[in-house]
Length: 247
Image 1 (cartoon, one colour):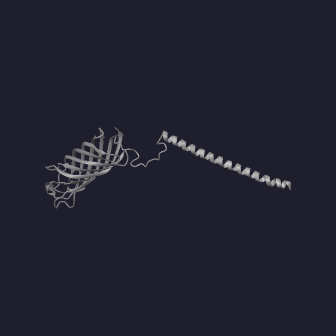
Image 2 (cartoon, rainbow, N blue to C red):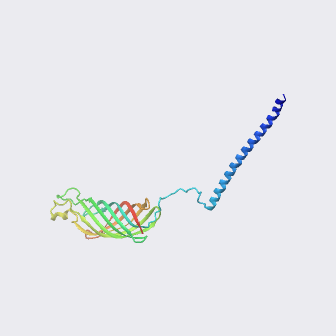
Image 3 (tube, helix red, strand yellow):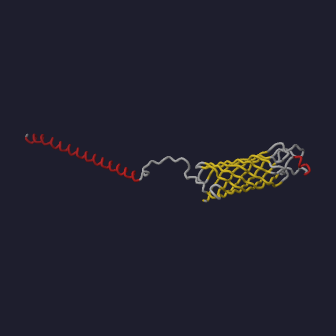
């Protein structure tokens, strides 16, 4: 009986001590967790004060991976060219030529460059009515020019350039007139095959794809002297520029 009574009084005391020990364990774990969190926050705050950009969120990037610096020494352009033309001074209608343009530029300064330009054009032209030829005969122009290029306003995305080239053009106007007697060639209205002066005045817009590659659109005012007077025509080309070499 005494043992049972003693057990009744001892067990509640042991249970109370166990509960107290459990509370102390949980309080210690919570204190350790708070200490760790506080220490991490303090370390992060100290790092941010010493280097504000170390933990800053990365800003979204707009534009291109590599900045377009326009410090290239050389530039090559290749594209397709379209040109309005008149294959004979006495012809009533004009024609359209299509072909290619190749341009190499050496940049002497950030603004001024020397350019060497080639253009090859082909197309068919209307002629004066004659029993010797039917349809539209083929004509072609091959032009080689030298000149200057000036780089105007520019930014990360695009640049505006101005250019002026002059040189010679060889016109082959009698591809399809072999059956026509020579004395009747003037009746057709075509020029005879000849080489004459030519010039191109215009501008170009370069839309940057990367630091070294851009898309170009380039309209031109063309001047030629195949006949007895200087005539003007419109041309436009579009293609790709590749920049290389560091000035």
